[in-house]
Length: 145
Image (cartoon, rainbow, N blue to C red; front, side, top):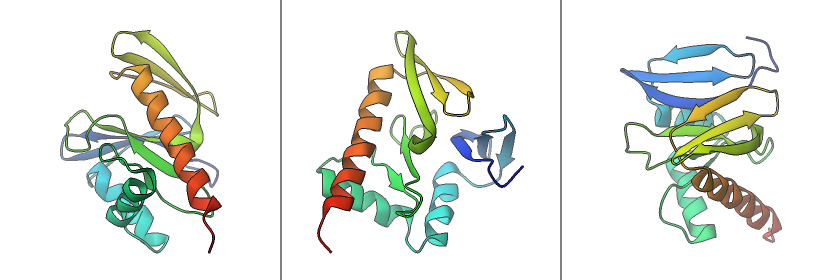
């Protein structure tokens, strides 16, 4: 893994998670996906729970809250379905180039580095989550200090 290698997607797997990186490497991690994100947040001075609460508060949404890892990098992750669902996949919004429909409830996500991932979720859901992430960042950075 290189310094520029970025995590693109985190999915639950057996007793932990699988993390896909921009170099194509897929790594097993003993932590659950939420815990991976929580530890990333803690390293930036907050918690995933606090970040999700902020997302809900600023956008007025209740479901599928995204997690802003760092205001500096703009790294923000969103769940494809309820984070309690076994098939929930977390995507790094700041690394997504495009989303394409592959059929009912099937999508292909293309990341900036050319990596592609097929997911069992409707492309409209992914696009809505991406739109929410952008709206959140716009509102967050537009707020007076």
